[in-house]
Length: 212
Image 1 (cartoon, rainbow, N blue to C red):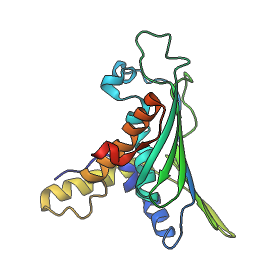
Image 2: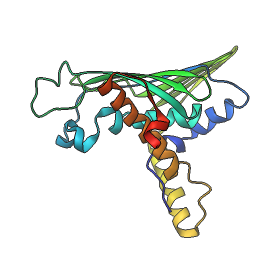
Image 3: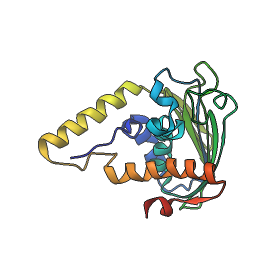
Image 4: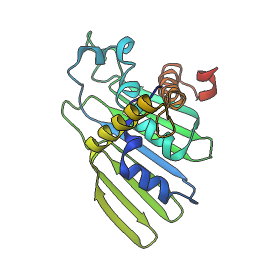
């Protein structure tokens, strides 16, 4: 039994947005993770963390994949303005990724770890004809035509639900409630690693190339 720790899939707000998206087509989406460099020394080493896109931002990549669908290709640019002069840091301190989804939707991701202090709450937004959804680590905002509402998100509840579902799967052998199976997590990692490769080689990278 394998359950990968992408807990954002287990939030009640995620389930609600997935339900509200029934019959709707996402046209464009975006994600952001902005802040400072974590104190853990392994984070600043590309060999041990994979960089911010693989470590922190992969949770947002996974959120997008769960709600929007699989990514076909990426094109990324990374910056080293702050981290470049530091011998102990060899990861990018900023990055922007353009996404093309298999559905035809387009998206973007912005992340940075150069600020030296916590940034805005990480999150994503999704938009299409007649709707806009914004999910952060602590809030859900929805606008559908003339109907709009907000509600808080309890991130700890996601951790708890993820643990309950996994323990139940181990005890009973029933895996149908596992929302983040190994195969899905491989796709998420492939997108993050494709972004790294795209930034390094300055070209569009297809996700199929990473999974070959």
